[in-house]
Amino acid sequence: MTRDELKKLLIESIRLKEVTRAGWIRAGVKQPESVAAHSWGVAWLVLVLSPVKINRDRAVAIAVLHDLAEVHAGDITPHDGITHGEKKNLEAQAIESLFKNQPEFSELHSLWQEYVNGESPEARFVKACDKLDMALQAERYAAIDDSLDLKEFIDSALAKLEGSDLIDLVD
Image (tube, rainbow, N blue to C red):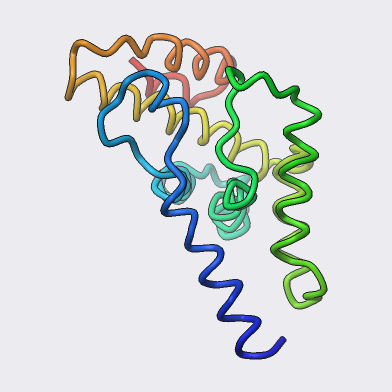
């Protein structure tokens, strides 16, 4: 990969900072977080909460990558009228466009795919931390603005965290 190709990928990837979390916008949150801020939150939770049986370094890498496709696909929510299959396709195409013809990034592409498919304990743990981050962020936004009704976000997270030790961290 040339220096120019690498720079293009790096600049394209940091555009994730500009993608606002669509669910928070729909819920009326003023100044909602970006997808990149959410990804940092997930990576932080993974770093702090990883149990011994999890390869923490691998899980943190997955957390950093888990929403990278949204640079191109956008933050698609269940309220957007796009099926789960269509969303998976759009995101797979987006990741392909970011990593195309770059064999040096095949491991990153594989880690992203591992997350999407929930193929490992690390991927499943990151998925749980993804939901925990959403619930904690909802609690934070509700504390800032008590006129917001963010119960749907907390309920959604709780449903996905059922049976997980992480559920105790959600009010």
